[in-house]
Amino acid sequence: MHIRSKNSRRGLAAVETALILPILFMVTMAIVEGGNGFYAWLTVQKSAQIGAHFAVTGRGEDEGTRLSQIITATEAGARSLEQDKLVVTVRSWPDLTAAGDGIENDPGAPCQMVEVAVVYNYEPFTPLISPLLPDSIPLRGYDRKVNEPWKPCD
Image 1 (cartoon, helix red, strand yellow):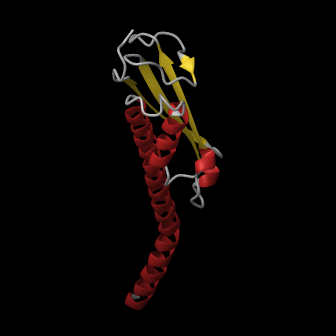
Image 2: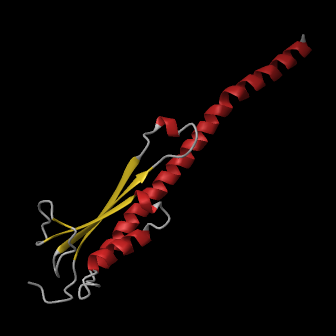
Image 3: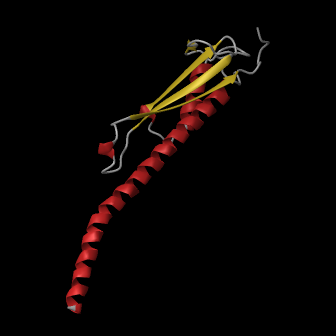
């Protein structure tokens, strides 16, 4: 009887392992997917900060390339992400209350509020977890700053 009990325990361990391994694999994949998504979100946030920091300096104002330089600087901050899934918008407000929708595609004048917003469409990639999530998850980040007085303020 003692031998039979030992063999049944071996079979029980194999069954337990077969039941637990898929769950552990899914938890591991969820951790990997969550970490990758969190990294993408942090990158989006940081690229918006980089773009806003560049925007307040007024660089490119005299050449008329300020908006394109802001977008380029923002995209450079997110170079580790897929650029075709990245959308950068710049808008400004004439006063510091930032009330209303603002003026799209305008980085504003000195002493005005400027916002750089970034949207990245994150697509989950890990097996078994991807079917549980939407096809695309929009990750948003933005930063608002007051433009420096590179010229006298109005």
